[in-house]
Length: 224
Image (cartoon, rainbow, N blue to C red; front, side, top):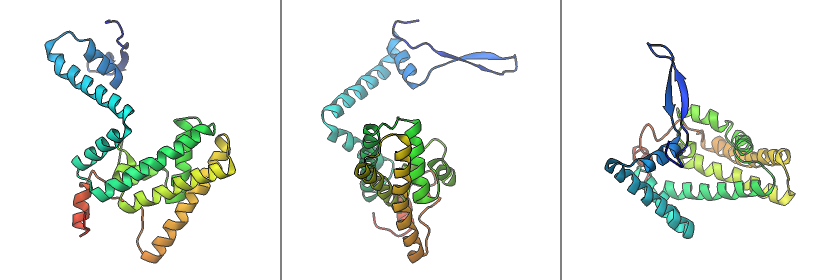
């Protein structure tokens, strides 16, 4: 095995000839494997990895470049400028919330996921996993498949949670869980009031898998 290469994971699969072990890598392992291959055929991939790495270094030095790159990716996928603006704002609000959680002793990944589920349940009546099923998603990012209104109502829940956590100086997981539910309720109350007055549900089955966001806007007769 080449020096520095991650060891592969051997997973056993049933086959016609009996159980066989297949060698598997996760994404990082595959990239490191490519870097270790001494073949001209691997050079295009190595150059691409070097380019991506260089771009990330540039983005660390100048975060504005990262914002521009994200916008360009969404535009290439068919999203409208108006939707992208809301999505970028939702990312900023989410980052502010997770930074606050980190300061207040909330552990990343599992606890972040639980608190996010509390906000979503109070705001939309669905946890993120339930929401993804509602939209027919599998591994896709839920917010990349939200409508304008869904994105709009995802923001006050998280912004309110951040504000409540700061003003009440919540520390640790359980107090922040209470704050998350309270913050989500702020958005949930506003959503229910709009639904009552407009006669239309905010939570939608629409998703990018069915059609590009910009195409859906045109079909609804909405200007980009």
